[in-house]
Amino acid sequence: MILYIKQLVIALSLLALSGWAVAASVLPENPDVCEPFMDGRVDESLLSGMLSAAEHGHLYRIEPGSSQVGFCVNSALKRIEGNFTEFKGGMTLGNNADNDGQTLVLIRTDSLDTQGALVRSLLKGENFFDVEKYPDVLFVSNSFEWTGTDTAVMKGNLTLRGVTRPILFDVTLTPETTGMITVKATATINRADFGMDKLDSVVNGEVQLCLSVEARKFERISAAKTAADGTS
Image 1 (cartoon, rainbow, N blue to C red):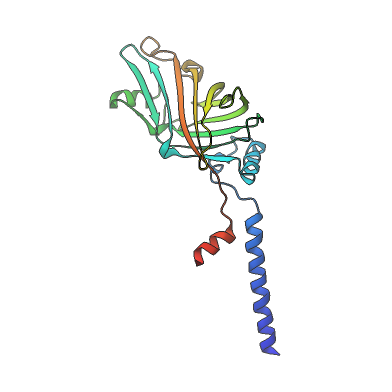
Image 2: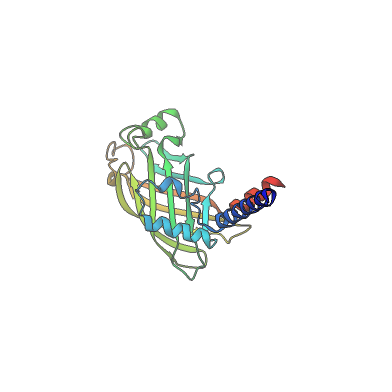
């Protein structure tokens, strides 16, 4: 009788564990693409929409290693080009019949790289990005409208130096291949709108933002699959 009870307890324990593994595979998980934005600065309904898109295979995670996020501006001496090497984000895309795309991008300002240490130090200083006081730049889209088979207009809000302003990007997307898409986007801002109003006789007020982003379709790995892979 004691042996039977032990066998029954073991069987019930195994059943409970298998049920937990199955449940874990269907419960929604927070893709790491959303984690940097869960600090209250981004509306929860927007994040919920991105998580829902992940469940339907419509969420793409930006690949920093093969992407470029930068800007260019004219100065009295030469054209200044800068790139940021640390950024995270993602986007949701359905088909081009739906104007429901959503994009989130977070950029670390201290990762700014330019030609020459002097220019880099100037741009990181308090007259421009002021990286010590404002460690990141945030873009949150609020409108995505297809204008062609592979072109679109993306509107949203850009937060830079603690100032949030509306912005419009012209976007070109390449056809999806092997779970990847390439997105190129350009926009023009006036730096004075974000508190960068110094040295206007030396540096042009208009700044062009340029993004060339590769994004990979997010595939959620279930706990059950992870456990199975670990035992294989």
